[in-house]
Structures are given as structure tokens and as C-alpha cells.
Length: 294
Ligand SMILES: NC(=O)c1ccc[n+]([C@@H]2O[C@H](COP(=O)([O-])OP(=O)(O)OC[C@H]3O[C@@H](n4cnc5c(N)ncnc54)[C@H](O)[C@@H]3O)[C@@H](O)[C@H]2O)c1
Image 1: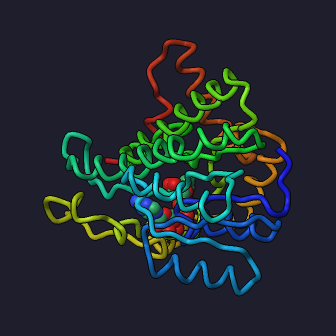
Image 2 (image 1 turned 120 degrees about the vertical axis):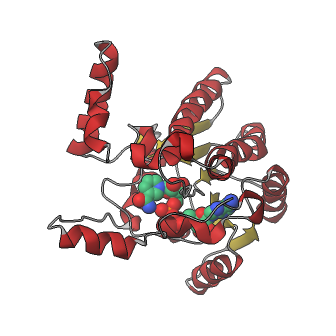
């Protein structure tokens, strides 16, 4: 679709990282932005910074895992601006699960599913009917990940399962929108191709009490800086993709009506080929073995 000044973009998880970069980019292109996030202090700061740069901003504290809050977000976005053209279901968390799957706490799964899967579904249900009904062009971007969206990292398997669900949900959404001849498109985003310097490693900062861990972690949470130092100490180079590049990929993809917002990467392509070959050959998924840690 054509992105034009005065249109409205809604971004969930907009107070930090990729969501904030997308909001900044939409605002720079003259769109009004609706910022939704569960972390009030960071949201207030993001909104103030964007307004200081001249953006038209509506910010709202929302837990995307709570259906009524997402329905209320849509209500307030339409009350404020009268239309929504772009919806980015981007809020996401790492689950904090440790060890093997049979040792995981159900709350690790409940929380990651509430935000990463139900959050996207609630966004679709709250906004898409009105976007279609308006008859105006629109686009939905759902944030997946190479982890799960392409192939699972078994050490982050809960997250991977949720991000695989986001791909399938978006493929289904795409088909349903086509079947309705809607003027609304859909894309699935794989941020990258490298690591991103965002708050994802500190996802536990937003973990609600209703999904609290039932027992203390065996190992403390590792920050991105700690992980980077450990990699460097092991002689491994770590590359980062700037979040602004992800935002550019999203805007270009919406303009081109591209479904797969998948940055060029030999590593991802090799994973996709290995997985597809394993299925086509009815062979066991040996490509996962290189990821499995003792
Ligand atoms: N960082 C990476 O390397 C990477 C890679 C692939 C995919 N992703 C995905 O990108 C998206 C954005 O993550 P990020 O890396 O920018 O991390 P981030 O932590 O910087 O941003 C995520 C935002 O979502 C918000 N959030 C968390 N729970 C929420 C909830 N219940 N309701 C509303 N908002 C909530 C957080 O407060 C935060 O502002 C996520 O879906 C993540 O899974 C990230």
C-alpha cells in the first residue's frame, strides 16, 4: 500500500527496541502513531521524545495479553484519529524457561503465549474488522523471529513455539484477507539478520504477577552485555543489526506489499533449505543437532 502523511500506525511494544524504531520511522514519514506498551515509564518517555520531534502521538498503557485492553486500545485509537491504516503486532517477550521442556514451568508457557500469540490474535480481532470496513488501504505486520519462525533454537524453545505460531497465524490471516478481497495486506517480520540490541533479554522486567515463576531460577538471567562479553571472551564475533534497519525493512515491505519481511541472510537461507529438505526427504531433523547444547 502507499504510505502517506496523515495516515495512522498502531504499534504494540512501542516503548522500546524494534517497536520504538518502527514508531519513529512511521512518524518520520508523517504518520500519526499510536504507541501501546505495558511499561508505563518507558512508554511516557517514548511518547514525549516523539512529540518533541514533532510527531502526532497517542500513547496508551496496554497489556496485549489481556483481550479487553486491546479492544479498548482500538476504541481509543479510532476515537482519537478516526482511522487506522497500519497495525504492528510487535510486543513480545522471552519466556525465562530453563532446562528441558519437561522441566519447564507452565507459567513460562502461559506468559509467553499470552503476549506473543494471544497478543497478536487480540490485535487482529480488535483492529482488522474496522480496517476492512473502512474500505481504506491497510496493512498488518506481525513480529515473528528466526527462532521458531524459521527453525527452533531448542535452548529457547517456548519462545520458538510462540514465534512459529505467529508465522502460521499471519499466513492464515493473509489467506483470509485475500478471500475477502480486502484492501488490507499482511506481513510477517523476522527482525535481523543479526542480533538486536534491545530490551528482549530483560523481558522479565514486565512479567506480571499472575504468570510469576513458581520456583527460583537455577541460573540468574543473563543480560545481553554479559552474553556479548562471554562470546567475545570465547573469541566469537557478535554482529548486531541496528533497529532502524528493521524499521526500514518494515516500511519498504508495507509499500511493496511483501509478505515475508525476511532480511537477506545466508544463515537463514541455509536453515530454511535444511528444514525443507528434511521434510521433503522424510528425514529426521538433523539440522537441529548443531543447536543442541548439553
Ligand atoms: N531482539 C531480538 O533479537 C529479536 C529477534 C527476533 C524477534 N524479536 C521480536 O521483536 C519484538 C520486539 O522485541 P524487542 O527485541 O524490541 O524487545 P524490547 O524488550 O526492547 O521491546 C519489547 C516491548 O514490548 C513490551 N511488552 C512486553 N510485554 C508486553 C505486553 N504484555 N503488552 C504490551 N507490551 C509489552 C515491552 O515493554 C517492550 O517495550 C518481539 O516480538 C520480539 O520477540 C526480537
